[in-house]
Image 1 (cartoon, rainbow, N blue to C red):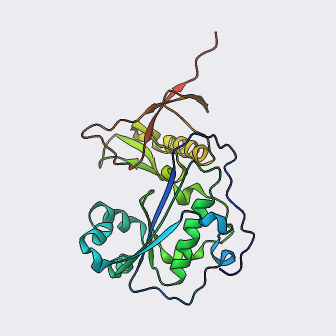
Image 2: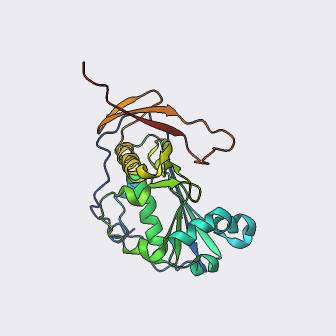
Image 3: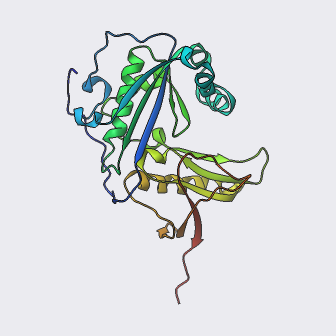
Length: 263
């Protein structure tokens, strides 16, 4: 490795032990084998030291090894997601290889594992990867967008966690939930039955609670937490037929209630 630079680590200032393992899986698609003349550089790609690479794996998988498995990441529901997030599907459709970047970290006190995963993805883009799929957040990124990120950028929740307002067309209510908190070893946050007039406000609440989770706060089943203008009650999410959000992570349902009136 060259240019090992003092990239600032992303901290978790409110970390509480006892969380689940944090898992990051990024799929980097390319049309051909990657270039081998681009050295890994902490300064260029944003790696906060060699120790951040502990447990990180990169696997090169050609489409020819399992075409059906490969194509599943650009078909079905994921294709609809890609259509809404990428400038064009041309690069995704042209891909013939992908590199899986994976790291699992037990109850991490900081977010250097996440920085390392993105640094490697940025390096792979510099070598020819054209599209990156963050499988936990279910978000596609054009390679050019990943390449444009400053190597010493601060942590931004908006990159790593999706806050989704999920509703049928013309439905008066929605489910608002996160995708991506598994990268922090924390459960996804879910609010059911949100009326359309409250979608933005509830999405803002969920986003603020997700930021607390990323910072290390550990919300648990049964917790009652003060929020602006009220209290948030947390209860374990238990999928039921017809209402399963397919989160690929544990979840907590958030019920907001006004603060009790003073006697």
